[in-house]
Image 1 (cartoon, rainbow, N blue to C red):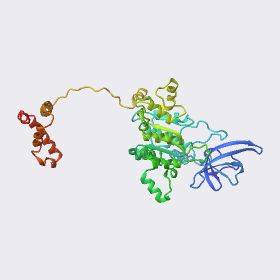
Image 2 (tube, one colour):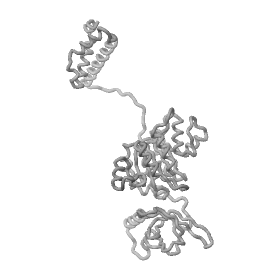
Image 3 (tube, rainbow, N blue to C red):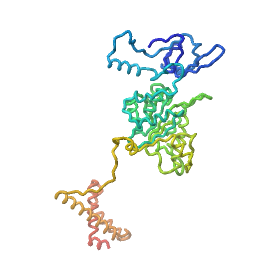
Length: 447
């Protein structure tokens, strides 16, 4: 990078060196005063020192330096560059930039920059997977329930939204709640497809962290991107640790967390009758600590309107409240936060269809060979004899009382070692006993 001119004003996305620390300019606010126009600059530092961010008056800072992004070679003073080398240089400059886009003229903020997360991920994005991203970017506060069909890529859609918000510096602290069996899958997906490192928080990681940093170390405060199981977070001591890490200074306008992603959120849905589950109470308690919320589920509605509206209330308490019946105004608001597409809808809009079409089952006549026909007949005969013997046993089997009970005990005690036999032999002996009892002679003996 090359230093900018001394009189150049900072722009969003530029690197700046202030107070012997380097950071990225995330916001610039001009103010007119007695001394002329001054600029309040919001700077996010990129080192491991504190504070992590500061707001300062740019004109009053001594020894400040702005760093321009890496400039391309001068076309007039050098030979033409090969096409492959030029593409490599352009990609390197784009991928190593502090911000993917800068304002074209630098005089006004870029209100609608183009999306960049699909170009920073190692995934082939389908066109329908961009719809949740565009819908989320139109929201001042992202409250979105993605209820796409199984196999449409809800994880990829959530990763695109997460990556885009990070590139635009709208979020910093992220928590992903999943079932315990999906934690590793989410971590691998975020790293392999979007180059986003996440830390798993569980009992083992908490003990390891406390060994390194001391007994007072809190993993919810030490890590900024966390993947955890919601069954782990519902425990009382773990939930208390999380809430302790969510404390903010009194009067602060900022929430302690930026984005909450809940996978398989139907498991945390409120109950239709009686008290809510521990998972639902946990989600109600921690959801207000997040600025943005993103819920994922292929089955968001279990047939009870009260459960569905309760989940929407946790997602966006401003638009929804838990109720037993949806009014027309609430049905219209559902379209603003819920996005659901089925595979047949995607197939109807694409040519050729992207997914296979399900057809109703049809019966087919099978032609069996003589050996297969004999084997099928033998199985059918055995099943008929078994069902017949069972019906006979149920028809004449009397209530075991008095003398009959004693005779049955004597009959069962014929083989006292049957309890020590393997399970298969015991089943065979029980079957033989039922066949013996089904005979007329055994019936007369029990009488």
